[in-house]
Each structure stands twice: as C-alpha cells, then as structure tokens.
Length: 271
Image (cartoon, rainbow, N blue to C red; front, side, top):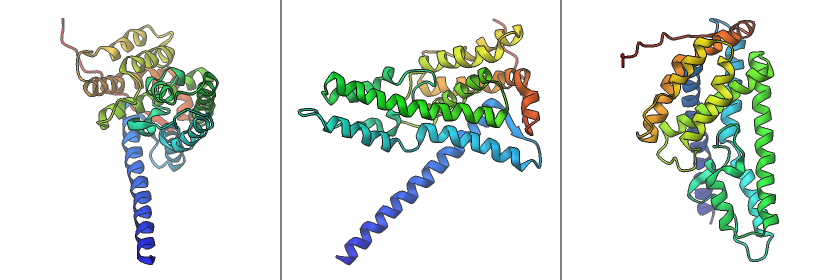
C-alpha cells in the first residue's frame, strides 16, 4: 500500500513539474514572438525595464493560458445542478476553449465554447449563467491586461487598448504556428479583423504613410494552411508594427527605459 501511495505521489509530482516546465517553455516562446513583432527591448543595463517587460508578457500569458480549470469547475457545477443535463467538459479542445478568442470578441461568439455548452442540454437559464461566469472571468483578465500595459509603457488608454489587442492576438497567432491542435483557437479571419480594427488602425491613425503600410500586414494568401498564414502575418507585423509604435509612443517608452527596434521593410517586387 505504501509503495502504491508513493508511486501515485511520484507520478502526481512528475506531472505537475512537467506541466510547469511546458508552460515555461511556451511562455518563453511567446516572449520571443512578442519581442520580434513589437520590437520592445530594454535599454542596456536597465534591469528594471527588463523586469517590467517580463511582467507585461507574463500578465498576458497568464490571462490566456493559466488556471482555466477554475472556470471549468464553475461551469461543471452549474451543469451538474440541473436535473437531466450533462456535465460540462472542455472535451478535446482542452484549456484553449477559454480565452483563446480575439481580444475584443465576446466569449459567447466562440464556437468551441458554444458547442460544449450545448452538449450539456441545460435550460436557457443555466446556459446564460455559464456564459455570465465566462464573461466575468474574461473581463477580469482583460482589465488586468489593460492596466498592465498602461503601467509598463506609460501610454494613454486608447493606445494601451490597441497594444493589448496586439499582444493578445499575436499570442493566438503564435499558437497556430507552434501547436498541431488549433481547433479551439479564434478563426484567423477574426484575428485579422481584430488586429486591424482595434490594433493597427488605432496606432496608425493620423499618419498617412503608416495607414497605407498597415494594409500590407494583411497581404497574405488566404488559401494557404492556417499555420503558414499565421507565420506570414507575424512576419509582416514584425516589419510594420514597430514603425507605428515608434511614431506613436517612443517617448513614453524611453522614459521607462524601453526602446523600439525598427526593422527595414524589405522591397516588394513590382506588380
């Protein structure tokens, strides 16, 4: 009996450590993608700025990936409380059924979530209760992200909302590149619309050159595989997004020891 308990304890500990390591690896991968696409870097020797950027990235990673099981258990409780209904599960979607929608989209529009809720066969009241719980959790996470952008970068609220949109949606695009299971993720077309409407257009507003340039970000072959489309979108963002950010908020960032690395846009072949 003791040996069995020790084995269970060992396996549990191994799973926890493995999960932490995997989350850490995923977090580092997303950090590299953010650094590439936004161009943020701390001034040499400014450890405070480096720590602040790491805190910013951690906030977004946690908002998207951490503690989804807590919300899962809340929905389970609601579904189990109704006679004749089936217990809510996230099925084959995994934790990405939550928070992996476009930053400015409503959870109720996320198809994987709707599918799993409908399988429970709850009353309309139970269905709405579950959506309310998801909304409440998402709004808390979203608010924390917005406040963290303002704290770290010292930008106005409108700019903070645009940058938050980009940070979140870039994470989801990177998930398309780094994962084979992409069904739980926001649709590419929804991410493109969110990035453009609530992110790039806000940052480029008032600058005719940037307003023209950001249209090139979405210049991708939509007939390709989603992974290829996501890779191309991220590559395009890495050229045009730092330019918009530099023009919009470089002074605020410099006050906090953060620079924006702007890359030269490659020449395009003539049509």
